[in-house]
Structure formats: structure tokens, C-alpha cells
Image (cartoon, rainbow, N blue to C red):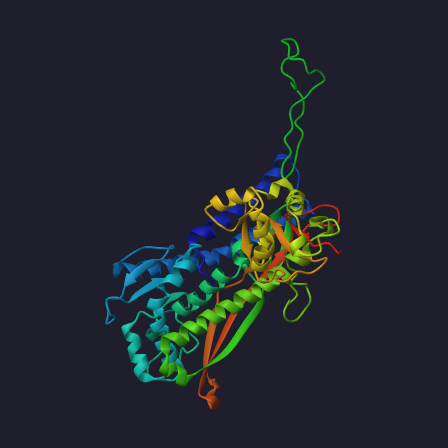
Length: 472
């Protein structure tokens, strides 16, 4: 399950209900029935609202357990929506365990607190993988937590010491959160896209189309006199409507399967646990980012039927400079200014650049050195700025120059794309998978979908644009 707070779920449900009420009020004010499209949208909103009640009950139950556990111990420092607590059992005084929180800063906090958790996770791996009763006993010295049917429990409460195959698919929250923390810190999709919690395997997300139009009252005369009254007196108000469209999401499960030698587990507990978590989190982020940026929509690896930012760009959203700018070194500041001007004004407030570090060092930095803009960018709280906009780096944008190729993207990606997450990270272990090799098998699974819906078309740019090198 994903760690989504009850407060956040309530906010999402409120937004869904407000949108449903808006549709109802429109038909009520106009004294008519809902149209077929309005009925479909209304039913979709209410269906999502009702499905989220289950998630709300689960979140409230989980938070109550966390609070109950925290109140039985000495609080140290509340951070990231969670609670830092000191274990009151046999753990040394410096052993601190992080109870999962719900804020976006949780990933950074978990990374900082990993040193206190990795020993417990390493011992857990040895206890489960090697069926090491001594290591299982040592788990009593650490607050090694797992989730069981929505309940927050110590691992020994869910897995018997004398039979370590029971409950072997349960993984300490410290390990699961470590992997997700690395993924969110390394990957850009979760940072720049609109992250949406999917309520089912297939979901539809309503996104805003056009807004309202403001009109003034008018009548035949525009002269304000005592005889005619104010302009527009007794005139009819022109109606306008806000439009929505639905973005379809279908969760696709992604897996990572690996083996860990029991010999390694016995010899280097914390280091092995840390490396496993780091690598699974890193590779999940790399795959997700590839799909988000470079996905072509093709089936199979590595695209998995996802069409990313570059492939979703419409022709009107690509700026191609004049001939003679076919390489990075030849791109001019004027071309970047023209690309920025191509983006519709409504998307500039939250706009950012998306590029590789190689492109930045070989193209942007030389331009900054010869530009007055470099002074204001250098004075910015973030050094990763260009033309007053922040930069997000990814290895999935071009890392070497090429002709007639989109080299960087610019725009409001949160208003143009959705990362739908069906559930949190699920990890299972098996001592039978590598029985003949004396290894423990670890299987990680994460279900999500990516939809880019505002890439523009052949006539109008969308919520982001691309800068291309010329063909010659």
C-alpha cells in the first residue's frame, strides 16, 4: 500500500465532490437534465469519491496505530509527517527508528535516517534468508516494523522464530521505504509530473480543459445617464462553461528479481542491505524516467506501451532554429529565447527546463558565461537556473550532440503529465527460489502508469515545448 495520509485523501475527495457539485449545479440552474457526457463525468467523479473511502479508512487506522506506538515511547524529533522514537527494549541508546510519514520530504528524511535502520534490515535478511535462529533472536533488539493487513507490527509478531519460512514475504518498512526514497530522490518523474493515487487498475483522471469567460453587461446604449441607468441595465448575462477531459490510466506492474548469497548475509549485513535497497530504488527510477521522457508507446521493453514527453510533442511545440545550428556548440542564445517564447503564457509560472548534465555543461554554461543573465542566475538560491527558470537534469535527454534532434524540453510538466501510482512498493522473499545455490530470492514490484496529455499538436503548442538542433 502507498503511504498516503488521511488528510491528503480527504483533500482529494473534497476536490472530486466539488467537481461533481459543479456539474449538478449547472444542470440545476439551467433546469435541465445532465447531458450524456456530463452524466459520464459525474458518475466517474462519484465512483472515485466512493472508492477512496476504503483508502481513507485504511489510512486512519494506520495513523492511529502509529500514534499509539509513538505514545508508548519517548519522542525525539517529529519530522516529515512521521515520528522519531527511541526503542525502549534492548536496543542501544543510539538506535532510532523512523515511523513512516506522509509528506513529500519523507524521502530525504528516510535517506538521512537509513544508517540507524540498515543494521536491523541486514539482520532481518540473514534471519529470513539463512534461517538463522541467532539472527532472528537479535531482531528482538531492534524495532524492525512490517505492515500486516493494515496493522503496524514488529516483524517477530508476524514471523515465528522457530519457523522462518512463515511470514517470509514480509519486508521491514525500513527496507521498503529506503528503496522508495532512493527512487524518488533519483528519478524525475515523481518530482515534475502530477502524481495521482490510482483507485483501481484502470482509472480516469479529470483534467481541466478551458476556463470561464468573463463578460460585462451591455445594452443598446453605452452612455451612463440618469435616464438610461447604468450600462447593461436589464440585459442578459452571457453564460460560459468550464470544460474537463478525462485522462485514462492503466497500472502496469514492474518487477525486479534478485538473489542474495547467504554467505554474504552472514559476512556483511548492513552493507548488503544498503546495496540492495540502493540498487532496486535506483533501477526503478531509471526505468520510470526512461518511460516518462523517452517512451515511444511501443510494447515490450523498455517502453512498455508508454508514450513519454518527447514522443508526445506536437509539431507546433518544437522549435527548430535556422540552418547552421546543427550541434550543441552552434546553438545560440536567441534560439533559446525563441523557444521560451513559443510556450503559451499560462504555463510559464511553473515552467522548468529538462536536459542532461552534458547538454548543460557544453551548451548552457558557455552561453551563461557570455550573458548578463548569468549574473541573476548565479545569484539565485538554486545554481541550476537558466533564463530565470529552474533546471531538472535527466540522463534520458541527449547526452551527445546530434542533428535534427530534440535536445531539451521546457514547460510546465505538472500540468502536462500524470504519474498514476496504483500502490506502494511490494517486496517478497523466497528461500526456496535459490535453494540449490544457497541464496535468498528478493522480488520487488511497483504498479504505475504514465500519461502525457498536453504535448500540443500540429497547430498549437501544449504545456511544454522542445528545442531541436537544425538538420544542417
